[in-house]
Length: 425
Image (cartoon, rainbow, N blue to C red; front, side, top):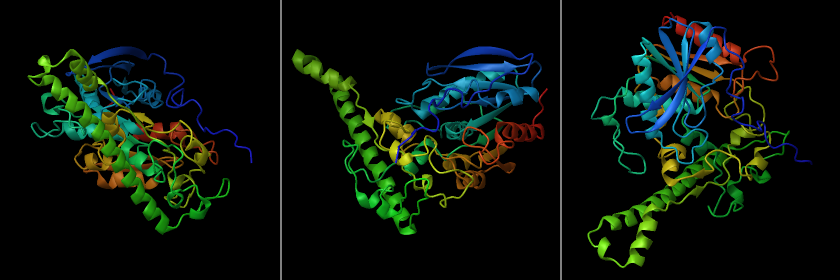
């Protein structure tokens, strides 16, 4: 059969999270930000005048300065602040702990501007980022984190981290590491060989229940249990590789600080110095392998067959596309490792008592009802709400319901929830 188009969204980031027009009278101000550690980011502040409350949006790598919720917020009388972090458009080197300093810089700026209420809108990976920030912000020094998962010193206790007044979590997974762990291919037997495969762990092997689309696949409970355990084991193996690379670099860095370093022959010093600064990268093969992509009876929803990226995940799994494909060891541990990353929503939401709205998109190909339900249940807020909106991950209407749901409905849900709690003007 012909392969046809692999990609569902051939230009991710192009306009999938963006609005088309702004309400009349909107003022847009580009705001450069410098965090307390010296890191630089920027944002766009949208106002129409007299707003008392502002809603912020940010993502670990995506530019949220044109998020589709912004026009709805402005029409309702709220200000909006869309932020782009220090690693725009690329998470190869993304350290979540450092992004928290960027968020802190934004919240300090907004408080200084006189906004009485600051609400964090965490969309997709922004949900795990913002819950990580809020959990650390409400933790009093000296009890905040002091390092990254790689063991590098990074003391959040030295930063001013203003907490937000509320959380809106929309189409958000449990963490980038968690979503990748559910989608990483456990049948890879050799990290250096993208085609290596253990057939007994291959979800795209017909012997395990796979059928080519449009026929649905069906996996047994026994296979899924083995599969999920093997996914965790592969993440642990990659964690070990990442830590080994980091330790090798640290070993040579320590040698440069040794008192004998200056007395070494020039050739030896050069070799050690180069190894001390030379980083190594991880290539994570095959990250389009969540059985729920092909078996819609797993965590049932209104989604159609396929993944976020493609209606043919069995083919896309072997291309260069996919989450977390190319990473520094430190970025892998902080961002994409489901075992090591601290940007894990369920861990952090349990520390957050601010009013919280959780919105599940019923046709999301990557985030399922159980994700949103577990976030809602784990939330420590006494004022919390779970809403369902018919849409795909990017807020587009479902093919079966083209005239309802989508971004307008999500905007109405958010605005209605805000109006019950925070003044606009």
